[in-house]
Length: 194
Image 1 (tube, rainbow, N blue to C red):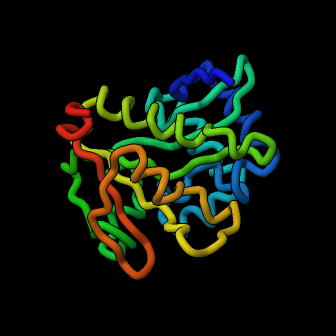
Image 2 (cartoon, one colour):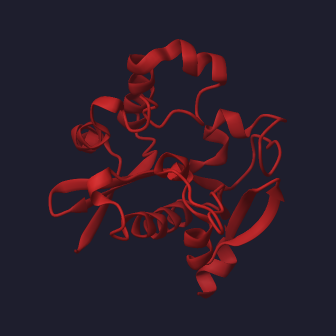
């Protein structure tokens, strides 16, 4: 399999909508869980969440990367400045604590790989591409909040943030852990030296 990648630009909207399918990725989230505050996310409903993502793409935000096998979209990763993700700005953020509006970091926070495409290395390829994309756009670091799957089986739906082992294999370092939830980080200087 030879994958190619493209950032989510307006001309790629139909590919993304096709990839997400009738369920809007996971449970009609349209990859807006981290973007919208809890109440606004609930009130938006499926159509509103789709509209939020579509508007981000239409306005040139490029909020993620699509993976293609030939012309068929086979995966997605959300990546962008941490300040885009409202839930990460909260004092109750699950990892890394609250941020100020000047934070120069980016975050990889959601993967979507359809069932028939899983276990083909697509998520890892997307992670590598997301890191490159972030650093090319001036990020000083890239963070992630993956699931540590060591010692236990997890449902596929739980793995939308990626796995700890995948991030560590890509050069990230665990920087914090609250309970069983790790936070990982890759600094620009470490990336440039590898």
